[in-house]
Length: 70
Image (cartoon, rainbow, N blue to C red; front, side, top):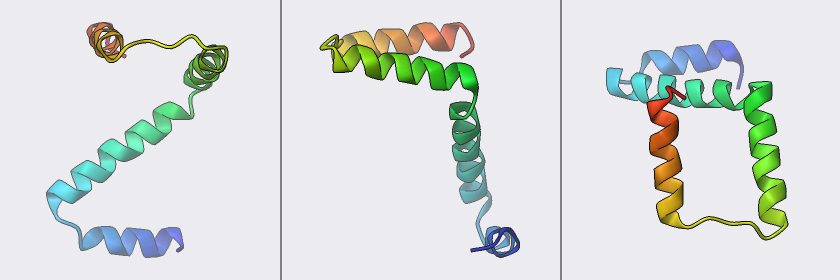
């Protein structure tokens, strides 16, 4: 699908759907940042070595990052 076709399809979306799409695009753009890519690569490497964290630790880290504005 071409960019022109995507733009045309977006016109048919509701406002809520477009907002959801905008949020999704923001996440994709964030994941393309070199520092984020390095963080993900590093985390995957640690997991491959057996270092894992609990669900509670994931939520705590998420809250910490939100507090930092990340």
